[in-house]
Length: 492
Image 1 (cartoon, rainbow, N blue to C red):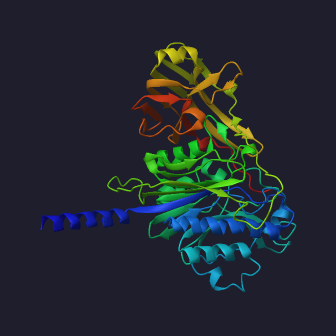
Image 2 (cartoon, one colour; image 1 turned 45 degrees about the vertical axis):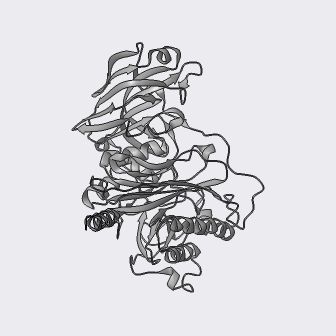
Protein backbone atom coordinates (compact mmCIF):
# COMPACT_ATOMS: atom_id res chain seq x y z
CA UNK A 1 0.00 0.00 0.00
CA UNK A 2 2.82 2.40 0.89
CA UNK A 3 4.47 1.73 -2.47
CA UNK A 4 1.18 2.44 -4.26
CA UNK A 5 0.67 5.67 -2.34
CA UNK A 6 4.26 6.72 -3.08
CA UNK A 7 3.82 6.01 -6.80
CA UNK A 8 0.55 7.94 -6.90
CA UNK A 9 2.19 10.85 -5.09
CA UNK A 10 5.04 10.92 -7.59
CA UNK A 11 2.63 10.79 -10.53
CA UNK A 12 0.53 13.58 -9.01
CA UNK A 13 3.65 15.68 -8.41
CA UNK A 14 4.80 15.45 -12.02
CA UNK A 15 1.30 16.04 -13.39
CA UNK A 16 1.00 19.12 -11.18
CA UNK A 17 4.49 20.30 -12.12
CA UNK A 18 3.82 19.89 -15.83
CA UNK A 19 0.80 22.19 -15.54
CA UNK A 20 3.11 24.88 -14.24
CA UNK A 21 5.80 24.53 -16.91
CA UNK A 22 6.08 25.00 -20.65
CA UNK A 23 8.75 24.41 -23.26
CA UNK A 24 9.88 27.30 -25.45
CA UNK A 25 12.28 27.85 -28.33
CA UNK A 26 13.98 30.83 -29.92
CA UNK A 27 15.97 30.82 -33.14
CA UNK A 28 19.00 33.05 -33.58
CA UNK A 29 18.85 33.24 -37.33
CA UNK A 30 21.46 33.44 -40.03
CA UNK A 31 20.01 34.38 -43.42
CA UNK A 32 20.53 31.99 -46.31
CA UNK A 33 20.67 34.86 -48.79
CA UNK A 34 20.57 38.54 -47.96
CA UNK A 35 21.55 40.32 -51.16
CA UNK A 36 17.84 41.03 -51.78
CA UNK A 37 17.89 40.72 -55.57
CA UNK A 38 15.06 38.23 -55.99
CA UNK A 39 12.38 38.51 -53.33
CA UNK A 40 10.55 35.30 -54.22
CA UNK A 41 13.72 33.19 -54.14
CA UNK A 42 14.96 34.69 -50.90
CA UNK A 43 11.62 34.31 -49.14
CA UNK A 44 11.41 30.66 -50.20
CA UNK A 45 15.02 29.92 -49.27
CA UNK A 46 14.76 31.42 -45.80
CA UNK A 47 11.33 29.86 -45.22
CA UNK A 48 12.79 26.43 -45.98
CA UNK A 49 15.13 26.95 -43.04
CA UNK A 50 12.27 28.23 -40.87
CA UNK A 51 10.21 25.12 -41.67
CA UNK A 52 13.09 22.86 -40.69
CA UNK A 53 13.70 24.81 -37.47
CA UNK A 54 10.00 24.65 -36.53
CA UNK A 55 10.00 20.89 -37.09
CA UNK A 56 13.15 20.49 -35.01
CA UNK A 57 11.69 22.58 -32.19
CA UNK A 58 8.48 20.56 -32.21
CA UNK A 59 10.39 17.27 -32.18
CA UNK A 60 12.05 18.50 -29.00
CA UNK A 61 8.66 19.23 -27.40
CA UNK A 62 8.70 23.02 -27.78
CA UNK A 63 5.24 24.57 -27.58
CA UNK A 64 6.20 27.99 -28.96
CA UNK A 65 9.05 29.34 -31.06
CA UNK A 66 10.17 32.93 -31.69
CA UNK A 67 12.08 33.99 -34.83
CA UNK A 68 14.31 37.08 -35.23
CA UNK A 69 13.59 40.51 -36.65
CA UNK A 70 14.46 40.94 -40.34
CA UNK A 71 14.76 37.20 -40.76
CA UNK A 72 12.70 37.25 -43.96
CA UNK A 73 13.08 40.72 -45.43
CA UNK A 74 15.75 43.41 -45.91
CA UNK A 75 16.55 46.07 -43.37
CA UNK A 76 16.78 48.99 -45.79
CA UNK A 77 15.05 50.66 -48.78
CA UNK A 78 11.29 51.24 -48.90
CA UNK A 79 10.71 49.90 -52.41
CA UNK A 80 12.77 46.76 -51.87
CA UNK A 81 11.03 46.12 -48.57
CA UNK A 82 7.67 46.40 -50.35
CA UNK A 83 8.57 43.40 -52.52
CA UNK A 84 8.71 41.26 -49.37
CA UNK A 85 5.68 42.76 -47.65
CA UNK A 86 2.27 41.18 -47.17
CA UNK A 87 -1.18 42.40 -46.19
CA UNK A 88 -2.06 41.02 -42.74
CA UNK A 89 -5.65 40.70 -41.60
CA UNK A 90 -6.89 42.64 -38.57
CA UNK A 91 -9.29 39.81 -37.65
CA UNK A 92 -7.29 38.15 -34.92
CA UNK A 93 -8.31 34.59 -34.09
CA UNK A 94 -10.47 34.23 -37.20
CA UNK A 95 -8.03 33.71 -40.08
CA UNK A 96 -6.14 30.49 -40.81
CA UNK A 97 -4.00 30.88 -43.96
CA UNK A 98 -3.21 27.15 -44.09
CA UNK A 99 -6.91 26.38 -44.48
CA UNK A 100 -7.18 28.85 -47.39
CA UNK A 101 -4.11 28.20 -49.58
CA UNK A 102 -5.63 29.73 -52.72
CA UNK A 103 -6.56 32.92 -50.90
CA UNK A 104 -3.04 33.21 -49.50
CA UNK A 105 -1.15 32.15 -52.62
CA UNK A 106 0.25 35.67 -52.97
CA UNK A 107 1.13 35.82 -49.26
CA UNK A 108 3.61 32.93 -49.03
CA UNK A 109 5.13 33.88 -45.69
CA UNK A 110 1.84 33.74 -43.80
CA UNK A 111 0.80 30.60 -45.67
CA UNK A 112 4.05 28.72 -44.95
CA UNK A 113 4.24 29.79 -41.30
CA UNK A 114 0.58 28.96 -40.68
CA UNK A 115 1.03 25.48 -42.15
CA UNK A 116 4.26 24.95 -40.22
CA UNK A 117 2.45 25.84 -36.98
CA UNK A 118 -0.48 23.56 -37.81
CA UNK A 119 1.61 20.63 -39.00
CA UNK A 120 3.92 20.74 -35.98
CA UNK A 121 1.30 21.76 -33.40
CA UNK A 122 3.34 24.72 -32.18
CA UNK A 123 2.84 28.46 -31.66
CA UNK A 124 5.01 30.63 -33.91
CA UNK A 125 6.06 34.27 -33.51
CA UNK A 126 7.80 35.79 -36.54
CA UNK A 127 8.66 39.18 -38.00
CA UNK A 128 7.11 40.35 -41.29
CA UNK A 129 7.07 43.46 -43.41
CA UNK A 130 3.40 44.42 -43.44
CA UNK A 131 1.77 46.60 -46.09
CA UNK A 132 -1.53 48.43 -45.75
CA UNK A 133 -2.73 50.20 -48.88
CA UNK A 134 -4.42 53.58 -48.76
CA UNK A 135 -5.57 56.28 -51.16
CA UNK A 136 -2.78 58.78 -51.70
CA UNK A 137 -5.28 61.62 -51.20
CA UNK A 138 -6.29 60.34 -47.76
CA UNK A 139 -4.97 62.33 -44.83
CA UNK A 140 -1.68 60.86 -43.64
CA UNK A 141 -1.39 58.40 -46.51
CA UNK A 142 2.20 58.23 -47.85
CA UNK A 143 2.76 59.47 -51.40
CA UNK A 144 3.28 55.93 -52.68
CA UNK A 145 -0.21 54.94 -51.50
CA UNK A 146 0.77 52.47 -48.82
CA UNK A 147 1.75 52.19 -45.18
CA UNK A 148 4.60 49.81 -44.41
CA UNK A 149 5.05 48.43 -40.91
CA UNK A 150 7.65 46.37 -39.10
CA UNK A 151 5.28 43.75 -37.68
CA UNK A 152 5.43 40.77 -35.34
CA UNK A 153 2.81 38.11 -36.04
CA UNK A 154 1.73 35.13 -33.92
CA UNK A 155 0.13 31.86 -35.06
CA UNK A 156 -1.44 29.36 -32.70
CA UNK A 157 -0.87 25.60 -32.87
CA UNK A 158 -3.70 25.28 -35.42
CA UNK A 159 -2.18 27.86 -37.75
CA UNK A 160 -4.62 30.64 -36.84
CA UNK A 161 -3.30 34.22 -36.71
CA UNK A 162 -3.91 35.20 -33.08
CA UNK A 163 -1.96 38.47 -32.77
CA UNK A 164 0.03 41.06 -34.63
CA UNK A 165 2.04 44.01 -33.36
CA UNK A 166 3.42 46.97 -35.29
CA UNK A 167 6.76 48.24 -34.02
CA UNK A 168 6.41 51.73 -32.57
CA UNK A 169 9.99 52.67 -31.71
CA UNK A 170 11.69 52.53 -35.08
CA UNK A 171 15.49 52.39 -34.93
CA UNK A 172 16.56 54.47 -37.93
CA UNK A 173 13.93 52.69 -40.05
CA UNK A 174 11.78 55.60 -41.22
CA UNK A 175 13.17 55.41 -44.76
CA UNK A 176 11.32 52.14 -45.29
CA UNK A 177 8.77 51.81 -42.45
CA UNK A 178 5.98 54.02 -41.16
CA UNK A 179 5.03 54.64 -37.55
CA UNK A 180 1.71 53.08 -36.53
CA UNK A 181 -0.93 55.62 -35.54
CA UNK A 182 -0.76 54.64 -31.88
CA UNK A 183 1.34 52.58 -29.51
CA UNK A 184 -0.19 49.09 -29.67
CA UNK A 185 -0.43 46.46 -26.93
CA UNK A 186 -0.73 43.05 -28.53
CA UNK A 187 -1.31 39.91 -26.47
CA UNK A 188 -2.48 36.36 -27.05
CA UNK A 189 -3.54 33.63 -24.64
CA UNK A 190 -2.11 30.11 -24.76
CA UNK A 191 -2.57 27.03 -22.54
CA UNK A 192 0.76 28.09 -21.01
CA UNK A 193 0.13 31.73 -20.18
CA UNK A 194 -0.55 35.13 -21.70
CA UNK A 195 2.07 36.43 -24.14
CA UNK A 196 2.89 39.98 -25.17
CA UNK A 197 4.63 41.06 -28.38
CA UNK A 198 7.30 43.71 -28.87
CA UNK A 199 10.13 44.24 -31.35
CA UNK A 200 13.77 45.09 -30.62
CA UNK A 201 14.14 48.84 -29.86
CA UNK A 202 10.68 48.83 -28.23
CA UNK A 203 12.23 47.02 -25.25
CA UNK A 204 14.26 50.09 -24.32
CA UNK A 205 11.14 52.19 -23.69
CA UNK A 206 8.37 52.32 -21.13
CA UNK A 207 5.77 51.18 -23.63
CA UNK A 208 4.85 48.64 -24.75
CA UNK A 209 6.87 46.50 -22.30
CA UNK A 210 5.68 47.94 -18.98
CA UNK A 211 2.11 48.23 -20.20
CA UNK A 212 2.13 44.59 -21.27
CA UNK A 213 3.51 43.50 -17.90
CA UNK A 214 1.56 45.75 -15.54
CA UNK A 215 -1.74 46.50 -17.28
CA UNK A 216 -2.14 43.46 -19.54
CA UNK A 217 -0.49 41.09 -17.04
CA UNK A 218 1.41 38.98 -19.55
CA UNK A 219 3.45 36.11 -18.16
CA UNK A 220 5.90 36.04 -21.08
CA UNK A 221 7.30 38.64 -23.48
CA UNK A 222 8.12 37.41 -27.00
CA UNK A 223 10.52 39.59 -28.98
CA UNK A 224 11.97 39.31 -32.48
CA UNK A 225 15.05 41.55 -32.50
CA UNK A 226 17.93 42.83 -34.61
CA UNK A 227 19.99 44.17 -31.72
CA UNK A 228 23.29 46.01 -32.03
CA UNK A 229 25.47 45.10 -29.06
CA UNK A 230 27.02 47.85 -26.96
CA UNK A 231 29.27 47.13 -23.98
CA UNK A 232 28.99 47.46 -21.01
CA UNK A 233 25.22 48.05 -20.59
CA UNK A 234 23.41 47.08 -23.78
CA UNK A 235 24.84 43.77 -24.97
CA UNK A 236 21.83 41.81 -26.26
CA UNK A 237 21.75 38.82 -23.90
CA UNK A 238 22.84 41.01 -21.00
CA UNK A 239 19.99 43.48 -21.51
CA UNK A 240 17.45 40.75 -22.25
CA UNK A 241 18.22 39.07 -18.93
CA UNK A 242 18.11 42.39 -17.08
CA UNK A 243 14.53 42.97 -18.28
CA UNK A 244 13.46 39.50 -17.13
CA UNK A 245 15.05 39.98 -13.71
CA UNK A 246 13.88 43.57 -13.16
CA UNK A 247 10.24 42.74 -13.94
CA UNK A 248 10.29 39.07 -12.89
CA UNK A 249 8.76 38.06 -16.21
CA UNK A 250 9.59 35.35 -18.74
CA UNK A 251 11.33 36.66 -21.84
CA UNK A 252 11.84 34.92 -25.20
CA UNK A 253 14.23 36.95 -27.36
CA UNK A 254 15.37 35.90 -30.85
CA UNK A 255 18.16 37.94 -32.42
CA UNK A 256 19.63 37.89 -35.90
CA UNK A 257 23.13 36.48 -36.34
CA UNK A 258 25.19 39.03 -38.20
CA UNK A 259 28.28 39.37 -36.11
CA UNK A 260 30.22 41.75 -38.33
CA UNK A 261 27.72 44.47 -37.45
CA UNK A 262 27.57 43.43 -33.77
CA UNK A 263 24.18 41.74 -34.08
CA UNK A 264 23.94 38.52 -32.08
CA UNK A 265 22.65 37.33 -28.71
CA UNK A 266 19.41 35.46 -27.97
CA UNK A 267 17.92 33.62 -25.04
CA UNK A 268 15.13 32.21 -22.91
CA UNK A 269 14.87 33.89 -19.51
CA UNK A 270 12.79 32.96 -16.49
CA UNK A 271 12.20 36.06 -14.39
CA UNK A 272 14.55 36.60 -11.45
CA UNK A 273 16.21 33.25 -12.16
CA UNK A 274 17.63 34.79 -15.32
CA UNK A 275 18.77 32.85 -18.37
CA UNK A 276 17.80 29.20 -18.63
CA UNK A 277 19.57 29.07 -21.99
CA UNK A 278 21.21 31.74 -24.15
CA UNK A 279 23.64 32.16 -27.04
CA UNK A 280 25.82 35.05 -28.16
CA UNK A 281 28.65 33.59 -30.26
CA UNK A 282 27.94 31.53 -33.37
CA UNK A 283 29.90 30.21 -36.32
CA UNK A 284 29.47 31.89 -39.73
CA UNK A 285 26.40 30.78 -41.70
CA UNK A 286 25.11 28.96 -38.63
CA UNK A 287 21.88 29.67 -36.83
CA UNK A 288 21.21 28.39 -33.33
CA UNK A 289 17.99 26.86 -32.05
CA UNK A 290 17.64 27.33 -28.30
CA UNK A 291 15.09 25.23 -26.41
CA UNK A 292 14.30 25.07 -22.70
CA UNK A 293 11.55 24.41 -20.17
CA UNK A 294 10.53 27.14 -17.74
CA UNK A 295 7.68 27.98 -15.39
CA UNK A 296 4.54 29.51 -16.88
CA UNK A 297 4.58 32.14 -14.15
CA UNK A 298 8.09 33.34 -13.29
CA UNK A 299 6.92 34.40 -9.83
CA UNK A 300 5.60 30.91 -8.98
CA UNK A 301 8.30 29.51 -6.72
CA UNK A 302 6.41 26.23 -6.32
CA UNK A 303 6.93 25.35 -9.99
CA UNK A 304 9.57 22.66 -10.41
CA UNK A 305 10.63 22.76 -14.05
CA UNK A 306 13.57 20.76 -15.37
CA UNK A 307 15.08 23.06 -18.04
CA UNK A 308 16.53 20.26 -20.20
CA UNK A 309 18.06 23.04 -22.29
CA UNK A 310 19.31 22.48 -25.82
CA UNK A 311 21.52 24.49 -28.18
CA UNK A 312 21.13 23.07 -31.68
CA UNK A 313 23.33 24.51 -34.47
CA UNK A 314 21.52 25.01 -37.78
CA UNK A 315 23.61 25.04 -40.97
CA UNK A 316 21.34 27.23 -43.07
CA UNK A 317 22.85 26.10 -46.38
CA UNK A 318 22.16 22.45 -45.57
CA UNK A 319 18.43 22.94 -45.06
CA UNK A 320 17.80 25.25 -47.99
CA UNK A 321 17.85 24.64 -51.73
CA UNK A 322 19.72 27.93 -52.18
CA UNK A 323 23.48 28.01 -52.59
CA UNK A 324 25.89 30.74 -51.65
CA UNK A 325 29.38 31.20 -53.08
CA UNK A 326 30.71 32.80 -49.94
CA UNK A 327 29.57 33.36 -46.42
CA UNK A 328 28.05 36.80 -45.76
CA UNK A 329 29.19 36.55 -42.15
CA UNK A 330 32.52 37.39 -40.59
CA UNK A 331 34.36 35.34 -37.98
CA UNK A 332 34.81 38.22 -35.53
CA UNK A 333 32.58 39.00 -32.59
CA UNK A 334 32.20 42.74 -32.99
CA UNK A 335 30.94 45.23 -30.43
CA UNK A 336 30.06 48.84 -30.08
CA UNK A 337 31.31 50.52 -26.92
CA UNK A 338 29.73 53.10 -24.68
CA UNK A 339 31.79 56.30 -24.63
CA UNK A 340 33.71 55.86 -21.39
CA UNK A 341 34.60 59.56 -21.30
CA UNK A 342 30.92 60.31 -20.62
CA UNK A 343 31.21 58.64 -17.20
CA UNK A 344 32.39 60.18 -13.97
CA UNK A 345 34.69 57.42 -12.77
CA UNK A 346 37.10 56.37 -10.08
CA UNK A 347 39.84 53.74 -10.36
CA UNK A 348 40.07 50.89 -7.86
CA UNK A 349 43.56 50.98 -6.36
CA UNK A 350 43.28 48.41 -3.59
CA UNK A 351 42.14 44.80 -3.66
CA UNK A 352 39.81 45.39 -0.72
CA UNK A 353 38.01 48.69 -0.34
CA UNK A 354 34.86 50.75 -0.87
CA UNK A 355 34.36 53.69 -3.24
CA UNK A 356 31.57 56.10 -4.08
CA UNK A 357 31.10 58.38 -7.08
CA UNK A 358 28.21 60.63 -8.15
CA UNK A 359 27.02 62.59 -11.16
CA UNK A 360 24.12 64.98 -10.74
CA UNK A 361 21.55 63.06 -8.66
CA UNK A 362 22.87 59.60 -9.56
CA UNK A 363 25.33 57.90 -7.21
CA UNK A 364 27.24 54.64 -7.37
CA UNK A 365 28.80 52.86 -4.40
CA UNK A 366 30.98 49.76 -4.67
CA UNK A 367 32.29 47.63 -1.79
CA UNK A 368 34.51 44.69 -2.68
CA UNK A 369 37.21 42.18 -1.88
CA UNK A 370 39.26 40.77 -4.77
CA UNK A 371 42.02 38.23 -5.29
CA UNK A 372 45.09 40.35 -4.55
CA UNK A 373 47.53 38.73 -6.99
CA UNK A 374 45.27 38.90 -10.05
CA UNK A 375 43.97 42.32 -9.02
CA UNK A 376 47.47 43.79 -9.08
CA UNK A 377 48.68 41.98 -12.21
CA UNK A 378 45.50 42.11 -14.28
CA UNK A 379 43.36 44.78 -15.90
CA UNK A 380 42.41 48.03 -14.22
CA UNK A 381 38.94 48.32 -12.72
CA UNK A 382 36.80 51.44 -12.57
CA UNK A 383 33.51 52.38 -11.00
CA UNK A 384 31.64 54.81 -13.22
CA UNK A 385 28.40 56.75 -13.02
CA UNK A 386 26.50 58.44 -15.83
CA UNK A 387 23.37 60.50 -16.39
CA UNK A 388 22.47 61.93 -19.76
CA UNK A 389 20.15 62.05 -22.76
CA UNK A 390 21.38 59.62 -25.41
CA UNK A 391 21.06 61.40 -28.73
CA UNK A 392 21.90 59.36 -31.82
CA UNK A 393 20.40 59.49 -35.33
CA UNK A 394 18.34 56.35 -34.63
CA UNK A 395 16.69 57.63 -31.46
CA UNK A 396 16.87 59.55 -28.19
CA UNK A 397 16.36 58.41 -24.61
CA UNK A 398 17.29 59.28 -21.04
CA UNK A 399 19.69 56.93 -19.28
CA UNK A 400 21.37 56.71 -15.90
CA UNK A 401 24.06 54.19 -15.05
CA UNK A 402 26.19 52.79 -12.28
CA UNK A 403 28.83 50.25 -13.19
CA UNK A 404 32.00 48.41 -12.36
CA UNK A 405 34.02 47.54 -15.47
CA UNK A 406 37.40 46.10 -16.41
CA UNK A 407 39.62 48.29 -18.57
CA UNK A 408 42.65 47.36 -20.67
CA UNK A 409 45.06 50.28 -20.29
CA UNK A 410 47.41 48.90 -22.97
CA UNK A 411 44.85 49.42 -25.74
CA UNK A 412 42.77 52.06 -23.95
CA UNK A 413 39.43 50.28 -24.12
CA UNK A 414 37.13 48.01 -22.15
CA UNK A 415 38.54 44.56 -21.36
CA UNK A 416 36.48 41.52 -22.33
CA UNK A 417 38.52 38.64 -20.86
CA UNK A 418 41.19 37.76 -18.29
CA UNK A 419 39.07 39.14 -15.48
CA UNK A 420 39.89 39.33 -11.79
CA UNK A 421 38.11 37.08 -9.32
CA UNK A 422 36.14 38.95 -6.67
CA UNK A 423 35.59 37.16 -3.38
CA UNK A 424 32.78 39.58 -2.60
CA UNK A 425 31.20 42.68 -4.07
CA UNK A 426 28.20 44.90 -3.50
CA UNK A 427 27.15 47.48 -6.07
CA UNK A 428 24.60 50.08 -4.97
CA UNK A 429 23.08 52.58 -7.36
CA UNK A 430 20.83 55.50 -6.42
CA UNK A 431 18.82 56.89 -9.33
CA UNK A 432 16.05 59.36 -10.15
CA UNK A 433 14.02 56.50 -11.64
CA UNK A 434 12.59 53.25 -10.29
CA UNK A 435 13.17 51.48 -13.62
CA UNK A 436 16.55 49.86 -12.94
CA UNK A 437 18.04 46.95 -14.89
CA UNK A 438 20.82 44.81 -13.33
CA UNK A 439 23.54 42.84 -15.13
CA UNK A 440 26.71 40.88 -14.39
CA UNK A 441 29.18 39.79 -17.09
CA UNK A 442 32.19 37.50 -16.86
CA UNK A 443 34.90 36.62 -19.40
CA UNK A 444 33.97 36.76 -23.09
CA UNK A 445 30.72 38.54 -22.12
CA UNK A 446 29.21 35.42 -20.60
CA UNK A 447 26.38 36.08 -18.16
CA UNK A 448 27.33 35.78 -14.52
CA UNK A 449 25.19 32.97 -13.12
CA UNK A 450 22.35 34.20 -10.90
CA UNK A 451 23.47 31.55 -8.42
CA UNK A 452 26.51 33.78 -7.81
CA UNK A 453 24.67 37.07 -7.27
CA UNK A 454 21.27 38.47 -6.49
CA UNK A 455 19.46 41.72 -7.13
CA UNK A 456 17.21 43.74 -4.85
CA UNK A 457 15.52 47.06 -5.36
CA UNK A 458 13.71 49.53 -3.17
CA UNK A 459 12.33 52.74 -4.60
CA UNK A 460 15.08 54.59 -6.43
CA UNK A 461 17.84 52.27 -5.29
CA UNK A 462 19.14 49.07 -6.87
CA UNK A 463 21.60 46.63 -5.31
CA UNK A 464 23.64 43.80 -6.83
CA UNK A 465 25.41 41.64 -4.24
CA UNK A 466 27.56 38.57 -4.79
CA UNK A 467 26.73 35.27 -3.11
CA UNK A 468 29.87 33.42 -4.25
CA UNK A 469 33.29 34.09 -5.74
CA UNK A 470 32.91 35.47 -9.26
CA UNK A 471 35.16 36.72 -12.05
CA UNK A 472 33.93 40.10 -13.25
CA UNK A 473 34.27 41.87 -16.56
CA UNK A 474 31.39 44.20 -15.69
CA UNK A 475 28.54 44.62 -13.23
CA UNK A 476 26.00 47.30 -13.92
CA UNK A 477 22.76 48.98 -12.93
CA UNK A 478 21.14 50.68 -15.90
CA UNK A 479 18.44 53.22 -15.12
CA UNK A 480 15.84 54.27 -17.66
CA UNK A 481 14.45 57.70 -16.81
CA UNK A 482 11.37 57.40 -19.02
CA UNK A 483 9.87 60.65 -17.75
CA UNK A 484 12.75 62.60 -19.29
CA UNK A 485 12.76 60.89 -22.68
CA UNK A 486 12.53 63.42 -25.53
CA UNK A 487 9.15 63.34 -27.25
CA UNK A 488 8.99 60.84 -30.11
CA UNK A 489 8.22 62.55 -33.42
CA UNK A 490 6.18 60.10 -35.51
CA UNK A 491 5.27 62.38 -38.42
CA UNK A 492 7.48 63.89 -41.07
